[in-house]
Every structure is written in structure tokens, then in C-alpha cells.
Image (cartoon, rainbow, N blue to C red):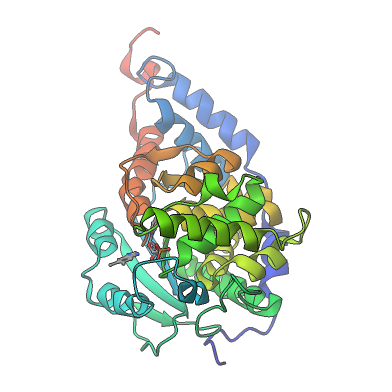
Length: 357
Ligand SMILES: O=C(O)c1ccc[n+]([C@@H]2O[C@H](COP(=O)([O-])O)[C@@H](O)[C@H]2O)c1
Ligand SMILES: Cc1cc2nc[nH]c2cc1C
């Protein structure tokens, strides 16, 4: 299928080779500067840590103040919907893409509140989706196969979808966005997320499978058993891209590429909910340094998200009991990331203010 990504060189090896650890001297400079600002040491808490991370990502102190941010919403369908894991019909994925296009979804509203832009990447919606400035056509295939019965996609398709994400990151960085936020839309994708989280954390399916958009107890039990069965097909030391192909989604793969691509360009990423958290576990397995380029925008109520963030070692910036996806939690968190850069850039030092410390 023509996915619109005209790729002459494989993007994945180049992205992996370009990812570096955070810049230690810039982080040290940020810590020193935080200690000199007119406040008791540590009193801005997590904002101070965020500013140090930003300095490490950019390799400069103060780091650039991010004026512009974008939420990249990766949309795809899931064959596992046929196995009865969600109350919503598959068509809602494509219908929500049209809602994003018109600006009517929660992520449109919350991104606009924070001064951000939304782009939507059709990486695997079953139905036809038109392309315009908001919705980018990058279909790798029309939905995954049902992961309950076999591989969700081939390894080649997973790699193609990762490369789509890397390409999207490159386009967004080249367009001048200083921070990239993740978003997702895919009916059924909390089942694939639970599989990824169970595999990478080693936790039992019961601890990482949640209600998603909302299921009754019997369906949650069926979903949990299905996750346990699918994860049981994976060897403990399976290659991370093979894991993604077996039990993941096309939007997970796209998000893996988005994070790798942004990290390879030293651009910070704000992760959204459980889908992004699951994708970040694949990133961690491929390039652990890339995770250091990420902020956890929020913590969703999905149990798998708690488990994923714990393994990623990321502290959520906000916790508002969101469980929507789309990039809503990441959009809400962006002003906090920006505020941490402003503190480092704009606050007076004790010397400036003539205050003894
Ligand atoms: O981001 C989250 O943590 C989150 C938690 C629950 C549901 N969702 C969204 O709901 C959809 C998947 O839910 P489900 O129940 O169909 O697997 C998908 O479009 C996700 O963006 C997202
Ligand atoms: C209406 C609706 C909106 C969503 N946004 C993200 N996932 C979603 C799932 C549903 C069902």
C-alpha cells in the first residue's frame, strides 16, 4: 500500500545511531542555576527537575523556551475489536479522525488552550481517510489482525510504521515545533497496550489490564484472559520490534518512531496516557537514552499506565484521573514544561536581587 512515506534510506538505524544520553554539563549548569535563583533550594520541586531535563535534552543552559508545541495523534484500528474487548464499534476511530479534523475533540480544545497545534496521522484506520493539512495519510495497513489469534502485523509492517513516526517527527521538528506531544486514537488499543505493558514489565495480565473506554466485569475478565494468552506467545527475551508486531498496534509503532525521531533531533516529547506509555516501553528496549528525552504528561487511571511509568522512571506532571487518550493529558502538561524553561531563563538570582542566601 502506498503509505505516503517516500523513504529512500531506512530511517530507524539512523535515528537509533543519533540518539545520545542527556548532556551532563548542561544539566549540572541548570542545577547550579536553580540553586542561585531567588527561592529556597528545591522549592519549585518537579519544575526544577523538568528544567534540568530540558537543559540536558538541548545541551544548553538555559534551554530554549518552547513557544510552539504540537500534538501528533496517531490513529489506527485493531483487529482485536472482533474478540469483544471494547463496547465501542471500530467505526468510531475513523469518525473521531473527522472530529479532530473539524477541531471538535477534547484534544483540539485542550491543545488550543495551551497554544498548541494538532496533527493527525492515519497510520492504519480501516476506512478511507482524506488527507489535508491536519490529517496526514500514512496508512501502513487497514487495521491490525486480531492479536488474540496470531500476530497483529508483520515485522516489516511494524518497522514501516516506526519509520512513519520517525518521518513525522522530522517534519514537525523541521516545521519549528520545540516540543512534540503524543496522541492516539484507536478503538481497542488499550488491549494492545496491556499486552505490551505485561510483556515489558513482566507483571501479570490482571495487574495491567484495565477497563479502557469502560467495560463490565465479565468483559474485563475476558479482556484480561485474552491479554494473558497473547503475552504467553512471547519469549521473555523476544526482540522488541517482534513484540510490537505480535501484540501491538500501528499507532503504538508510529509513536515509537515519533519518540525516537524527536530524541534523535534533541527535541523533548510529552507523553500522554497508557498507549504512549506502552509505546515508550518499546522505545526503552530499543534506545533507553530516548526515554530521558520524554516527560510523562500525566498518569491515566488505566492500571497499565502506572506500571509503565514506574518502569520508565518517569513522574507524571499532572494526575487528573483522565482516561481519554488523544493527547489530552500531554496537552494539559505542556504549559508546565514551558514554565520550567521560563523559570530558568527569567528568574532573578540572589546576586541580581541583592538578597543574601
Ligand atoms: O490514554 C489512556 O490512558 C486511555 C485510557 C482509556 C481509553 N483510551 C482511549 O480509548 C480508546 C481505546 O479504548 P478501548 O476500550 O476501545 O480499548 C482509544 O482511542 C484510546 O485513545 C485512552
Ligand atoms: C468517543 C470516543 C473518543 C475517544 N477519544 C479517544 N478515544 C476515544 C474513544 C471514544 C469512544
